[in-house]
Image (cartoon, rainbow, N blue to C red; front, top):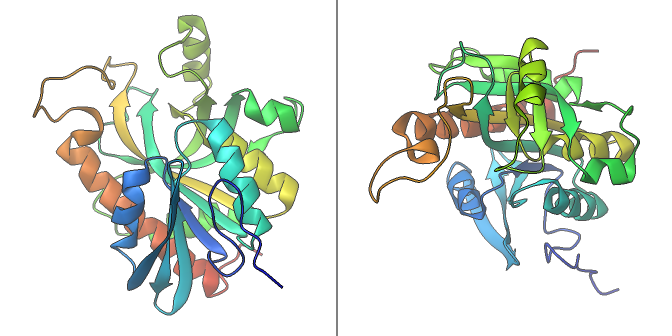
Length: 254
């Protein structure tokens, strides 16, 4: 029987591991793969880049989702079709709370569903919640980190350049830690498909402090290019891989 290939990520059975790390940025896939003990490029199509390899003998994959929930849904659907059952988003986020500094890390426990994609799957009352065992493994793997790690609810939004100040104030008062653009659909789909998902994020700005991604001069290190953010991205990759090791060893809250 010929191997069936998924139409967007261009991978089939045997190409990806059960454990998959999901950066938004395609360029970050190769960076994540550099942390593996061994890795090979499996596919590169329409911005979805996939590397598979091993850490401590454990099969592991990294695959980009692109920006936003629509493309994230495509990746989750197609990865789950070919055997992936534990997905960890490794991304960046803008903080809402004034005490959160650039260069810190957030482990999401749930996401406010301010996106449209997840609503195509489930009504808004359906919660977007990270898998508790994945959250626990991420937090356990972060112990001893030199980077401050926080945990809590985040928001997933569709529109980077649009926003409502009143909505943001309400989320801030509700102790929502930060905003990004993918996790609500990741969590919703994972729950529906009875697979596991989690999210770990490097803080690259703080909207309350008016520190956010925007135009900058050539060579200027702002936003994701900030050295503090790059350090946090390296650290979140290490933590995510550490969580995979724990989960593969049977880590569970039960």
